[in-house]
Amino acid sequence: MRTTFLMMALLGILGCNNESQQPDFPNLHPVKGVVKLGGQPVKGGTVQFVPEPDRPEFLINSEVSTDGTFTLSTVRTTDRKGERRAGAPTGNYRVTYIPMISDQQAGGIVEPVTTSQLITVQEGPNDLTISYPARK
Image 1 (cartoon, rainbow, N blue to C red):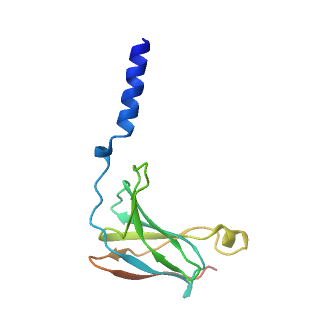
Image 2: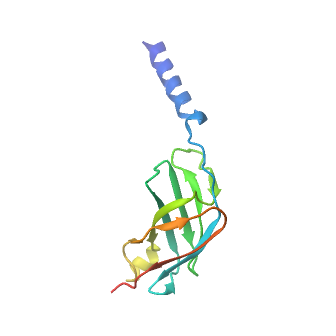
Image 3: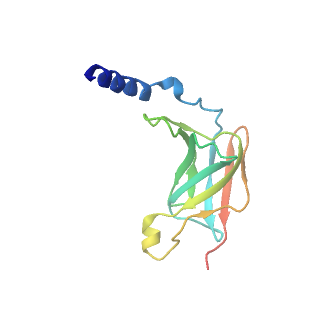
C-alpha cells in the first residue's frame, strides 16, 4: 500500500512537470499602442486581448503605462515557469481595459470595459489605438 502511494505521488509529480504537454507558441507579432477613454489616454491599468474564437491556453495582455501606452506579450496559461514572449498571434480580438485600483478608489472608472468591435492583429508590427467611449 505504501509503495502504491509513493508510485502515485511520483507519477503525479512527473506528470506536472511534463513540458511536452505545453502548447507551442504560435507565431507572434509585435503589438504596441495606446488606450483612450473618451478621446483621452488612460492613466495606467491593464489590457487583455481575448481572441475570437477564444484560445484559453494563452493569455495575451499588457500593463498600461500612465501615458496610456502598452506593449503586448503572450504567456501559456498552463506554463508554471511563466515564460512570456513579446507580441501576439494574428487574429481578431475583444480587448478589455481594466483600470488601476487607485482609479477605482478615486471615483474614476470602476469596472472593466470591453471593445464592442473586434480589434485585428496582423502579421508584422502593429500600432493600435484602443478607444472606449467616455463614461457617463
